[in-house]
Image (cartoon, rainbow, N blue to C red):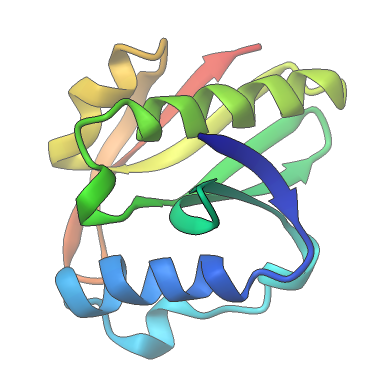
Length: 137
């Protein structure tokens, strides 16, 4: 399994379309924003097949991990955790002291195992309950 930043994020968009728009029913206009061009896109692949992605945006000393998704065929393999760990490592290398993400509420235990702590109130994002989580780097 290889996880690396990519400048052509077409495969990342294809994964996000499959997971967020097709599987989860998020309306297309809510998935695409103007932040992709400012972000680092991590792509996880094996034998050339894209299997997971995450989007990294630095805001001062804070790194935001977003748009984390894993193809159905690779779920349960540890790939999601590997993407989050890689994102945290990259932010730490950039000098960030904190990482945060917006977790779908059902996924909070997954992120807690990776050292993230929920904060704030639950909120709705694209019809799905979410909660912010953070981790010191």
